[in-house]
Image 1 (cartoon, rainbow, N blue to C red):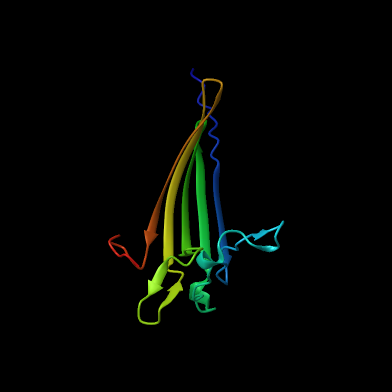
Image 2 (cartoon, rainbow, N blue to C red; image 1 turned 90 degrees about the vertical axis):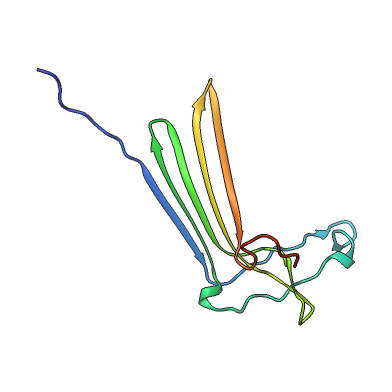
Length: 133
């Protein structure tokens, strides 16, 4: 009689983080001169998003093993970390809303590890991708 006992190992992980307030990139200072790295003409702060619950940042990761392959999917909902858009009426830069989607595969290959990763930036202010500001 054949052995009908089989074991299946299923490893699934879901992680999520919510940050209630948007955090912009910080420009590092020049430790030798005690000033901002780069020309100050290019350093500016944009208009920050309002400190509201819906303006927080959300990141999530789901991964699962299929045999020896680790498959993962990622999501981020927040804002660009640098002020990359310009409000033409108020003449001020701001941090536009951003969604990021990603996926990755990691598996052993020829005595090493192979990894393939891809992501998509989805600017919610310019979904068609043809806006200049």
